[in-house]
Amino acid sequence: MKKIILLSIIILCIFLLNKTFVFACQPIPNNYYKYLTLEQTISSSTNIVISERTQNRQASPEGFPVTSQYDWIEMNITQTLKGNLGVNNKIKIKTSDACGYGSNFSDGFGESGKKYLIFLGNKDGDDLWLPVAGSNYERGLRQYEIAKENIVGLNITVNNLKNKINNGDVNNVDSNYLIEGRTYTIKELNANTSATPRKFFTEAYIVYVDKLLPCPPGTEGICAPPAPPYIIISDENKRSSYTQSDTDASVRLGSYSVDSFNLGSKYRFETSISSSKQIDGTSRNEFILVSVSNLDGSDISTNTSTSPVSNNPPEKKSIFMRFLDWFISLF
Image (cartoon, rainbow, N blue to C red; front, top):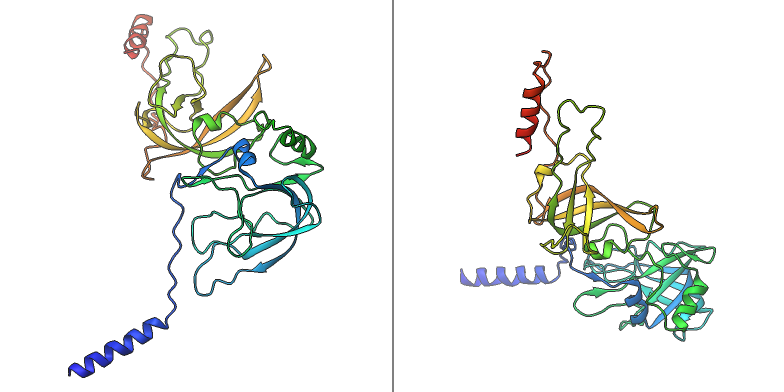
């Protein structure tokens, strides 16, 4: 009997050793990577080039899930802004990840017939170029599309950027390096320069909740209608004055109720952000709330509740009682 059991175990082990197992890919945790700014990416790049796609190799998962369609993409360099790769030089950049957290180039950007600004880091053991990477899970920016010598997403031309790199003046690049759909701090979001509304995530504290006061009775037509409700969120759980700093943002709530939030609590916000010129010539970002959740991903109460509609006419009150009701509502 023991021999039969031992033989069965040996056969099972042989079967398992020859069996290919596929495990489900796990999503990237929030804030797993910290993304470098444009200036930090430029400084940390080994090479910065303009290139166009020439060919690619189909990903070969070999029984293990990958998150990209290709192993690598071959790019032909048409201009070098930093480094010594020259021109008409073909390089291969790594795109696929074996079910890991995205640390390589995306295979979706290399559309044939288009040119791209690419920030290169170092090569891997297979002689494939990787993106810029810092310490402690820091990742640099990867690529931008080029359209008529302008860098899409950056308020600068290719030649102007090259001159700034050559002159060592990359701290004042008028940039819009934020990538839609990623998580940033309020301070980083306040650096947005794009007038096109884009959606970003941030995790911030509630430091102020706007409690709108109703107009006093009898002032209809004279009292200005209340502004849309808003909250002020901040990277830090404090607010020393009524003057907002670069770590604060005023967020319009839309259909969300101010009663959904607790002062001093931290939430994960998805906001639509766009920059606009003010009368005094300065630019200011407008934040509009798209969605909000607790830090653990659970939902919070969202919409303002409404009272049931009654067909009975409202009870008429004297001016004194209306004023008294208004005065009580202030507390």
